[in-house]
Length: 120
Image (cartoon, rainbow, N blue to C red; front, side):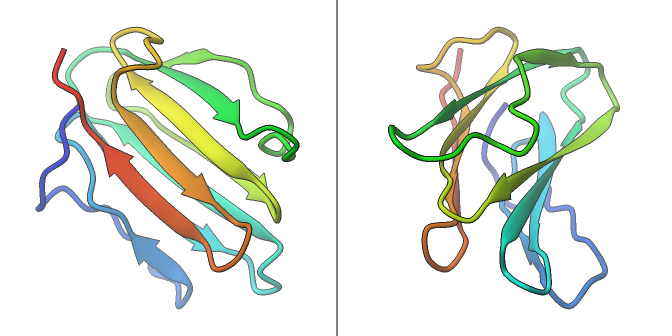
C-alpha cells in the first residue's frame, strides 16, 4: 500500500470526505447525519489480498462490532464504523505488521483521518 494522489474514492453523499489513498487501496470516510459515527470504506486494488487489523487508543471504544483482524481479497470493498470517542488505527498491508501502512483516525472532535505509507 502506498499513499499517492489520484487514487481517491468518493461517495456521492454531502457528508463524504475523500481520503488520499494508496495504490493498493482506496478509502473514503463519511459521518452519519447526527455526527455520532464515522464510516471508513476501503477497497483493495493492490492486486493480491491485504490484511486488515485494528487498534484503538487506550480508554476509547472499539470500532462498531469490535471487528477482528481479517483478510481483504483483491478487488473487494469493505467498510467499518467508528463511534464518537474512537481514536486509533487500521493497519493494512500484506501482513499485520503494526509498523507498516495504516489509516489513523479519530472521532473525538471533528472526524479526522490520516493515511500513512511504509514501503515493505
